[in-house]
Image 1 (cartoon, rainbow, N blue to C red):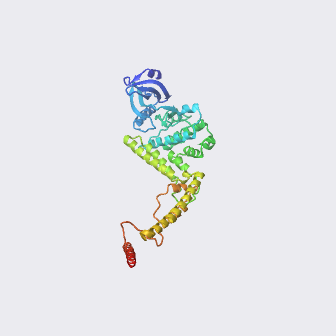
Image 2 (cartoon, rainbow, N blue to C red; image 1 turned 180 degrees about the vertical axis):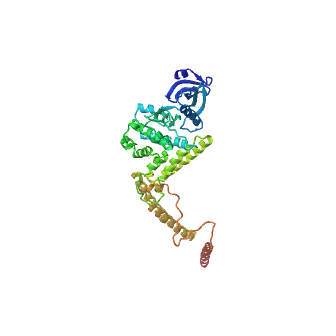
Image 3 (cartoon, one colour; image 1 turned 45 degrees about the horizontal axis):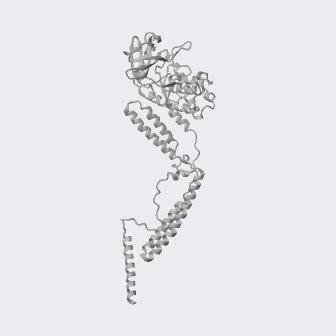
Length: 458
């Protein structure tokens, strides 16, 4: 069949088959060109006449039907499917990149950063697939069905669910691939947790460079700790343990929630202050990351859905930045800068004290001899204001934990006036203000009258 198709054009010459990309029991996937649209495509060809059993035909038709309903940036985009001369063709957008199975043979092993990107991308794709009605279960996730794209993201391909038909001794057909299949798939009970197991098996294979069935085991469980040793952080190791749990009822069903839950187990050092603004809960950052992943996981539903996803992603990033600004430990200033800051505060305190409590009141008191008693009251007010300012500066210091509080401090709340200090509000005069104004006018009038009588005596 392969040699016949190699020279055949499809759809009246629209699709030109170039070279095979992969082959399995469900047919051959070809690298092809869509001449009408001028773009590369992948064409999966399944020979219905050569099918060993009707189940193969049913799965091939199901793959085409399911893929035609999916729209997600981490999944291949469906173009069309058709039948020609007893062969079922499924045409998809070509995913540019390298299968993990090829990278696995080339080495080196996947870094922790790559593992985290892979797990987060897998979470986005699975949230989208498992959230549909009914849920779409891939059932055959493994390195050859994961493409690392040129931008570093990961795409998940081949929705035939039967890349290989494995027939263990004495038994019925098993759908999937040994080592990457969850135990319940041997009983035909695949569910969302089964895909999580396959992603965990793929991740540990890429970390260790060893096929999962060849890794150390404890009973039915892969001994993750012995397999990865110190290759990854405890966070990823613990996540893999829960993803590779043999019992589907105990296994995690959401990779993103699992990573957040595992990372939140690490206890934070106790805060130096009970002020909750200084040490906000870590859940703020986790919720922002989860909101971003959930928003992007639903971005495949058209322009409106993608627009809403982008808005949700912006909100998530704002929340994450807010969390960073409100985490006091993220704003620890160097010791030299803290010392300079505190010296500057002392100098400012001295300058305010000298200017507002000595120089300005002294000048205003001298001027009051010529211009009246109002300037003496102004001198007292300036001196009191200088005292308040100096007090604020004296109580302000920057240490290792409080510089973030100072940097993000809002405008100070109005201070209550000291006892005996009258606060005058412009354009809101009181009877006491009017009485005092009249008294001042009488004093000035009496002063002028006394001056006139003195000159008349002379």
